[in-house]
Image (cartoon, rainbow, N blue to C red):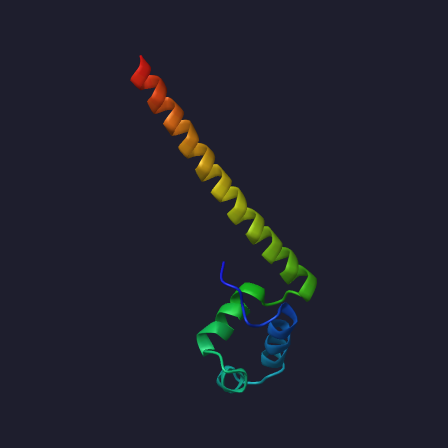
Length: 88
């Protein structure tokens, strides 16, 4: 997962500014990010507080780790199966 140059609290502050009525175009110029990124943050983190945002990121990292482990174990199982079939 790509590391953001913004901390969770910075993202939350930018989203709070938007909720307070600051236009996305102005926020994107002020923080030197694309408007699309602000909209992505809003759809992903809108309505969350910093602790919820941290928990979401922890769960996403754990999910990625588990998917990688599953893929590795699946590959091992396939190799074992192929080895067994070759011996029979």
